[in-house]
Image (cartoon, rainbow, N blue to C red; front, side, top):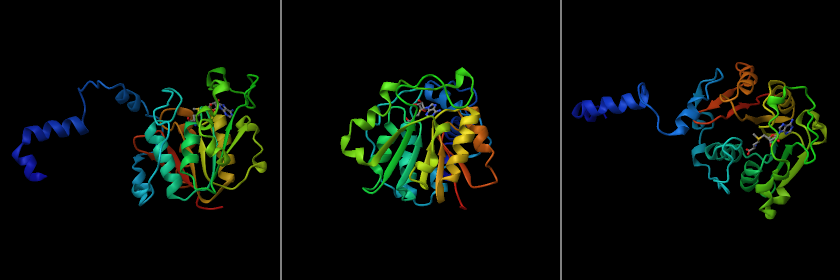
Length: 252
Ligand SMILES: C[S@@+](CC[C@H](N)C(=O)[O-])C[C@H]1O[C@@H](n2cnc3c(N)ncnc32)[C@H](O)[C@@H]1O
């Protein structure tokens, strides 16, 4: 490496400059702006391979990988990482809050073992416009009701692994669920009070060694603020190249 730099110092400087100090460079790919805006939160971003040793050997299959809503869906890499974490920790009992079109539900179900199960929660199809917690209108991120779970319903052979619940997450009867969970994924309402409430409930209903995953860390200030409150209290990580933050529950 050093020899290469000495032989071509000018090219080396240009490459290093562009990669590590991209000042004065105008990005031409909108993704660079989008990812650049994920700037909330105090956590330093780490590679998923630094959190879960050996995860790089995990094999994951994705379906409907390109069937995404730009503003609402998880990125393909995020779904891939979430499924990899689930497989790596050998999670069998999963909870997702915020089903949307079911792309993530579908892929989690697909990568679960035969005995695995995912419970996914979204507001009812006949939602009346009100929420359990009093939050400003602008925070209501309720998606088209008729499309909830559309993607996993395309694969009826996976239906036996999926349990759809229609409920406001703040009204959820956690005691009636098949707790404790191995992995909980929070991606419902992103208002601070909802994220806080979902997080407190999730931590209570997670197994020891279980993983709590939040979406939209860095992109949404409220989510980032809730996650940051756990820094120093438990192992919490923000995963590089994604809006995923995760915590590992060490004690019951
Ligand atoms: C960002 S989307 C979820 C995306 C999905 N997890 C995925 O990976 O494709 C958020 C979903 O949460 C639902 N939602 C919003 N407020 C909710 C609440 N209070 N309780 C339950 N679900 C809620 C919305 O209807 C929407 O479908």
